[in-house]
Picture 1 (cartoon, rainbow, N blue to C red):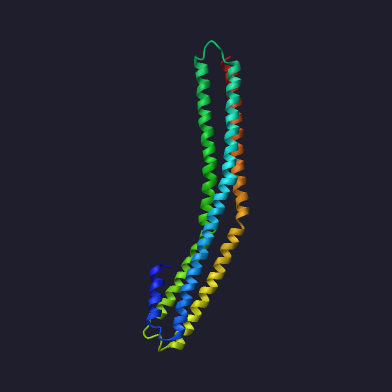
Picture 2 (cartoon, rainbow, N blue to C red; picture 1 turned 45 degrees about the vertical axis):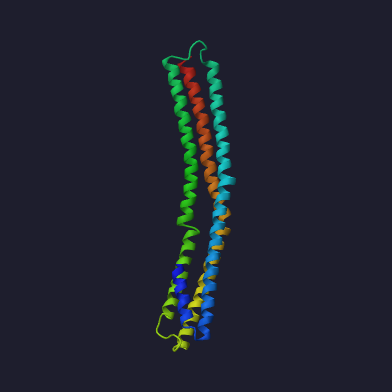
Length: 234
């Protein structure tokens, strides 16, 4: 909820606080809104920390392992070509074609690995924003704001103290609804956080499969280039 709305509601309550029950609602409204805002913020931080942990502990190590494997494949390629490449010259159309293949396959492998990282990250973040956590957190914010707006509307009516019984009943209902929305919404967010491990495993599997394909492709590229050199250049 906008801070000015909460301040406005507080001013209204203070203005009409000839009655004790309005002073009580002033305190309750401030405490409930402050606590809900803190609770939602805490869960946002927890979700961000879990995502950061997933990237640092799962995705980045996979990329590191893939980089090592690809470098090993490139080293193997150079060693095998070194054994069959004529010592007296490195020129000639055929070996220039080999060098061109090496360059292309090296670039393609880098692109494939970057695609693995981007696809894994973007898929998770898109899923995080469209299907989990945020779609639960944002409606909770919106619902709490709507309830506060209702309370502000009640307090904005002319002489609420004169209609104390009716006003108190409506404020009771609004605050009870605020509590229900807060409890249910926070429980939903906790459930989303509890399910993070399952989703973390799913994205790790996706990333692992993509990286494995990239490594296999790099190794197949090595075999192809060596075979091409042996068949065409030797």
